[in-house]
Length: 162
Image (tube, rainbow, N blue to C red; front, side):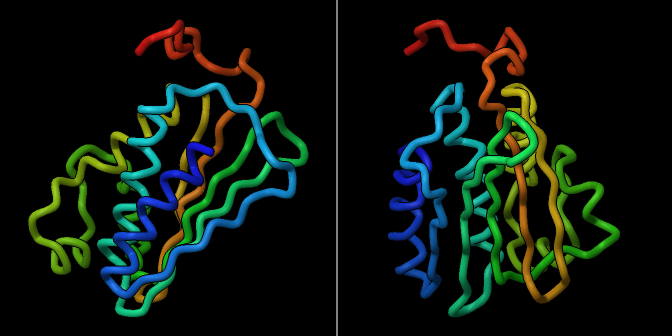
């Protein structure tokens, strides 16, 4: 439901920019993950925001949620048809204030904090994030989140916070 709501809000932005967004969800109706919804929303919105900002006219974004077959995790991926990321920059993507050369040329005013923040949120929930990209063809960001509460670092477990 959380992801569905975020995709619905992003769909409005995409429509105004001539982009399409699709949500490929698993067959099972609901997958239980133990997250702070506000923080996870921030991480996913940061990733989707980049897919929107750095996409091309008539581009697409596909968000996929799937349970990992061999591990107690779900994997969420965000694939876009955007400007892509240079190979030399992939390893630096999640570094504070880092922005690739083509990203700076495309949007000079962004801060370079979105992916850094997303990575920190995901890691503190017991997950990992990575990216693949092809210049001028698009990017895919993958992140995992545990479905077993014991895999979440204790300091991130929410105890009825508002």
